[in-house]
Structures are given as structure tokens and as C-alpha cells.
Length: 335
Image (cartoon, rainbow, N blue to C red):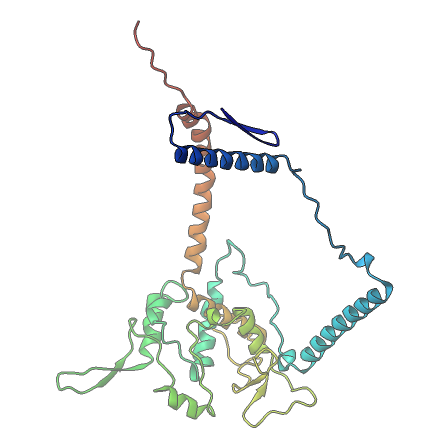
């Protein structure tokens, strides 16, 4: 019998006398290897669980006074330099003179407010007599006016005032005819090049979706139409441009289009500049969003339906379906 001891580890090897010397030596080496591994494992298990590591104290309070003063000075100088750079940047920006339009209390601005259709009718009159000389509305047809601002007969009469190029006829030639309800609003210029040539290089935008295409919507358009003024001191404009603080860049190629009593309304409403601007903005809102009233009406119906259905759904879920969902079915076999 052979005993090997290392520390607290003990391994007892029983070797048979019948084994060969080489086999005995191999078994002794395996036993020693087991003892060493067992001893190292117990040593690792007996080590303390918490290892103490040195911690670096990097708090500001632990720094010397000289370093505190240096860091404080550096922070103040950096913050002051950043603030000064921002102030200088804002002072030299050209957009400082650009004003943002205020929020006007439009009658159709509420969640359940409809468009003023009398204002839409007056707005079309403003577009027809003032704006249509330069601006097109190529996505709006005369039939769209029916039931909104005009009757069918009135819309037909308006369409027939225009001559529309149509064709070809049987001989292959183009011809002109009076307009009809299916025709779209005619364009003031034949092509964009002609429009630029007639407006000193500026292309008048199409007004079909101008309310949705401009940030601020009708607030921006109203402010633009009524915001013309003399340029401030130090600002010079080249010939053919006008100063408007609401227009990006403040220099606009469109002359002031509106003024008091520029037209006479059919219903006798005083045609002040603000009234004319308000009516044409309402008309442009309808042109850009013809489904405005229908959308709000449908939203109101959805809210009413939801107010009725949601309590019923809650009752069915809480007091009917929950009982069935949480029940337990147990099978008891017959004895």
C-alpha cells in the first residue's frame, strides 16, 4: 500500500503486486497529478472572495488649489467663447430680418370647425380678378366649385367665359371652344419660360397646393400678402424687387398685389386689404384640401361611435370574456 500526502489532501493508492513495474509507475504519476490538482483547487476555494484593489480619487475636491483655479478658469473661458461666437453668428445671419407669421384665429381652425363657404366664394372672386393674371391653379377644375361655393349653373357660366383649346377635329386641326365643367382652370402663360420672361425671371408658383407647400399654411400666405413695407435702413434692393420680411430672403419679385377696395364683392362685403387676404387664403385652403369638412365630419362620427363602443367592449372583456378565459377545466375519471 502506498500513501501520498500533500497538505490536507490525501490519496491512497492500492497497487496490486501482480502489476508490472511500468504500470505501477504510471499509476503513481496519475495519483500524484490528482493530488496536486486537488490541492490547488482547494487553495483557490480557500482564497478570500473580495479582492481589494486600489481606487484612484479623481474628485474635484481632492485636487490642489492651483489645479482648481486652472480648471475653473478654463471652463469660464470656454463657455464665454462659445456664447460670444453664437451671438456673433446670430448677429450676422441674414435670416434675422425674416419674420415668422403669427397664428391667426381662423374660423376653420378648430377640430370641429368647417370652412366658411361664403369666404371661399369671395376668395375665388379674388383669385379670378387678381391672382389669375400670374398664378395658375392647374389641379383645380370648374366642377370642383359645384356645391361648395357656386351652384352648377353658376359654375357652367364661369367655365363658358374661357376659351379652351381642344382637338384635333376630323381634319386634324386644333380648335377653341367655350369651357365646360370638366375643364381645369386655364393657365395664364403657355409655358414656364413665358412666365419667367413676363415676370423679370421669377416663376409665379402654382397655387393649387400652396397652403400645404408653405410652412405656416394660410398664416404665412396672409402675412405675405399684407406684410409689404419699406426696407429698413442699410438694406438696398435691385430694381424689380420688393421688401417683405415674411418672404425668405426678404426680397420678392411679386409687387404688392392687394390694397383696399381693389375689387367689389358680389355680396357687398367691404373689400379691405385684410378681408381680401383672408378670403383668398380661405379659398386656397379649400383648394389644397377639398376634403377638409368631410374629414372633420368623419372624425366626429368616429368619436361618437368610439364613445358608444368602448364601454361595451370593456364590459364584455372584463365581465364576460374574462370569466371564460380564466376558468379551469378539470377531468375526473370515473371510479
